[in-house]
Image 1 (cartoon, one colour):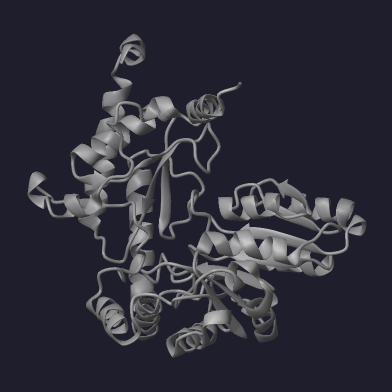
Image 2: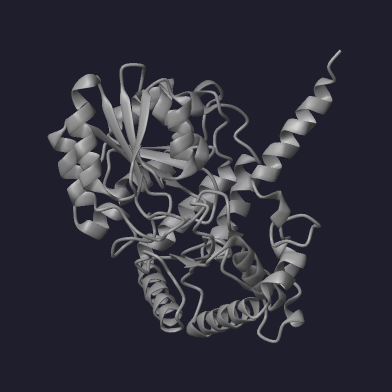
Length: 410
């Protein structure tokens, strides 16, 4: 009889090896770091602990007003929602927050969901069926790509931000399908570049297609007041059929949401599996996100400060000769390296100096484009950026001074 446990273990080990196990063997790697311990050990480094790994873009995670709102909500509502909002009821704070967020974004309605990743996984298959087509940017977030693969529709990708190639696909394929959905990111989380939204809207309108725009990294970041890619380009957000956002970035909480026409949101609230069959957001999470939204509306200078910081970091990095790819200077800036070994080496050197910026070498990026991805915050300052760039330059020089045979032996 075949030992299924052994075959499963063999399979898992083989897949792990192909995913890059050699880079993390031995336990001496920069992943799953207990950052609270590092934050409390600032005396280990003369300049303290510095994180460039968290997308707390507007500094909401530790804001006293945001934290107090979460604590008060626990006292008032308890620690969890208790059930799906459809069958178990909701708290008044759920609807209040969704209404306020919809008003802020300039859309008809918002539906909050337990997970941002789940939102894309659920909505694509719910919208698109066997006679339909989804066209996604090849570098769209994994939740979009996985959602497309899991759906029953036909799924194709187009080259990153090549909207001419997208239109050629539509000209070739549109007549073969009933409904067509274009799916892409607003601000790309690995490269820090953006989609040309006005051109994309014109293309989808000409070809009778819908648009799903993932604004996870662009809400709170793009636009003068943080209203996302539509504000960045000065277009009406209601031209986007479905916008997907998250509460885990600019809002300093967790969970996802859909922004759309009010009638669409009502339909989804009764039918979309990721909402209907999942527990509602914890009231404390909703309260903290609502407090963050209130702060964002009162203090749009947080967005301005984030943008100034992002442009500053980009200029400092480029002046030092670092490769920042296509980043435009909006919260996400990658530093690209020639190979994964160099990338991991540099990230380790940063960690030794109290700078937490893990390498991205296999997950979510082309294998020939390893990087240290830096998330910028309104709370950072020039000293943080100069410290980081100097450390990267020195670590890269040290790596390139290692003889290749010595590197292979290690």
